[in-house]
Image (cartoon, rainbow, N blue to C red; front, side, top):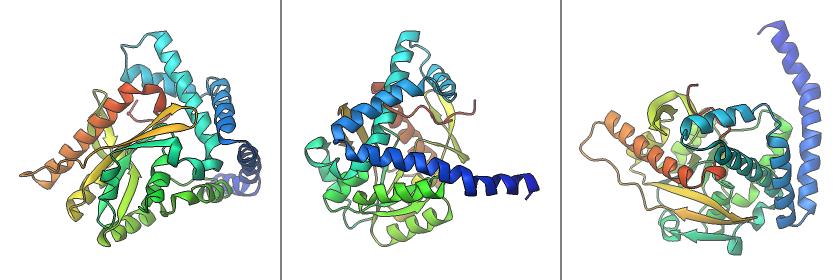
Length: 295
């Protein structure tokens, strides 16, 4: 480790992370004091107002232009504004996750979640609407999921987010060795796991996504084949404000008569195709911030 790198890490640990945490905690408890609908509405306004001014908005425009070149400039701008609105709402809704089920969330295909209780299943989704609705809704009907997530770099913020996710009731495991060990253990013990599968994975396979190869993690397909675990794809749709529809697809048909390599590629291709179909139908509700493609 170089001296400069060590100094940078020390600076983050002693100054940058605590300063960031003060701001995040202040916003979290400010939104917690507000009624959910008010918090969501104000968070959407903040997202729309500030998002377009951030440097990362260039990545959003590039991703959207490359994925859907047929859109007009006005259509792209409307989608981008909607994406920032949705992201702002998500941030404001974190203190209210325990209110995100029941009358606020319409569930289509609930029977598929019920079938996953007591059996090894893999529940997959993407960064749609408010993706935290999935584990909360599952928990309310008795299905506690083993969740795999990307932890926050800031340890103070990470602590707050884990606390906010408590209504999900499931076990949280960070991506990497901890997550892999927890997932294998859960599937061996006839439990369901949940993961978001729409991010780039440099060690994955190049699978078509919006007509272009996108590096896609292979774990979901490999685990399904190894443990004979059905894959259930879920979509979250924001209806209006802090109200949602969760669509739970039937288990993905598993390939037969293929080598494991071909079966993995087949599963990932069909999953990416279904993700793309939903994103095209609701482009403003997907998180275009990811560096999903190579450029």
